[in-house]
Image (cartoon, rainbow, N blue to C red; front, top):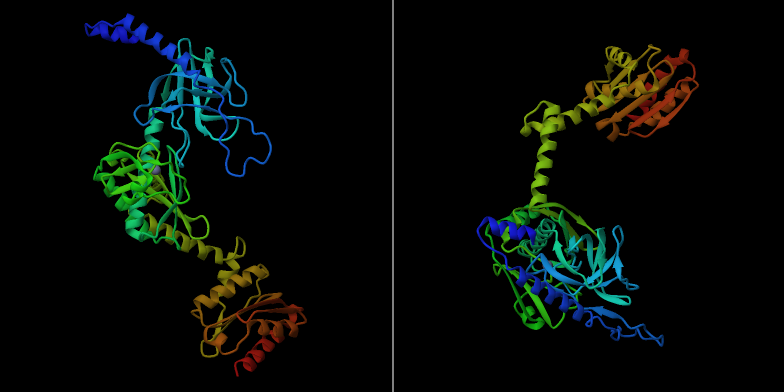
Length: 483
Ligand SMILES: [Zn+2]
């Protein structure tokens, strides 16, 4: 009031204080009268619910929903508390409260409940959530409120103010799910049936029946179709009609959902048409933009698309861009070079991992020089006397010999001081040469043990002094197997 008087004064206008006071008084009268509306009524029991137990009568607190038209309203506090009624809530206290009329959307149809504030002369409360109470002794639109300052009393006239930014962000996501639904059916066919959705201010999910995962191209097509509908700036139209008429008009209804006789049909430019009680943007252009973040399976034949719209979509772009730039900076590459660079780094990393660990690198590199390739280029033998050559080094060495000297086709073998290993591939493997048997015969010839698979074998030499015998046994077994 004080602010209004001041602003009016600056413009040479006056305020009708007496009229205001009279209107406020009238509102208080109405609020007192409305408490009479809050009366005990017989509970509406579901079929089969009444099993002889005397059911407690349920109290329904009538709340007119004003939230389709406005996010703020002067209303009356009809009731405090659900299980038991309270007269007042002091600062710091929290409970559910009921209003005679409310701009707060109560969580339904996947859309989250509104948050905001209640303010009155001398006090203020935060509305943390709003849900429909459909079971229990009290039913109605329940606002979970925490008093910040002052005392909130039953019958108080309060200004109910929905957080308008959060409501608008939620509306963008809700409208986006309608456009997505239409785009999915256009792209994948009319067999797509909505199974559910979640709509919040930061993201939305849309669940639908479809027998397989979507290809990246299909997801892109759907996303482009949705964003084209956003740019077309389709007008949102809401009409109430009998359910039969709505279904005859082709409006999408949620499978398994129970609808009243009169339903609310939300349209965007005649392109998308759904039965829906949610809150929406005025024109599709208000959505701004939509990004499909992921497409996953959430059960047999049911897929889920997660998406962000409006400010959340812009934040998503900013984050992705920042991550990409950061990656490019680290790689000292241009943005378009990043995928190539990362692929090359992964290749190099794999190569490095194949090489021996610190300390053995020199032994492997030195041993590569002593490799003898015989048998028409199909057998590469390395006899290593370096005591630094460990069993793992021998494996790394045999891998490198196989790849670099035999081109991945033939028989590579490494005889270290106390170890032996062999790798077989290509034509030799196909021809029946078995690395495990080669290694076993070599190890046994020196009093040791070994074995393995046809493609790879390793073992220990019993007596390093009998390595020549091990090599000879290896060669004769090879001639036997390759015959
Ligand atoms: Zn909807």
